[in-house]
Length: 74
Image (cartoon, rainbow, N blue to C red; front, side, top):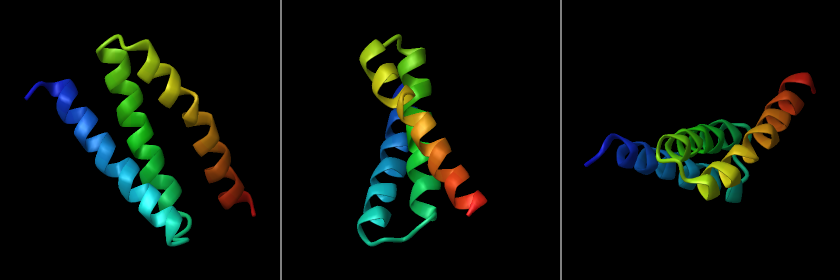
């Protein structure tokens, strides 16, 4: 298995666990885990030069930053 594929699988696990935690309203751990998965996917999109993945997950990073800042500042 290639390095990028391992990154994708690890990112997938973090994203799915984050989604599950969101559905059971387990906050803020859901943001941290889902956000970690998004970073893994963004890096794998960059390494594999996949612009669709890079665009999709790259634009999610600021959303998670806003969520984390909202939690920390309130």
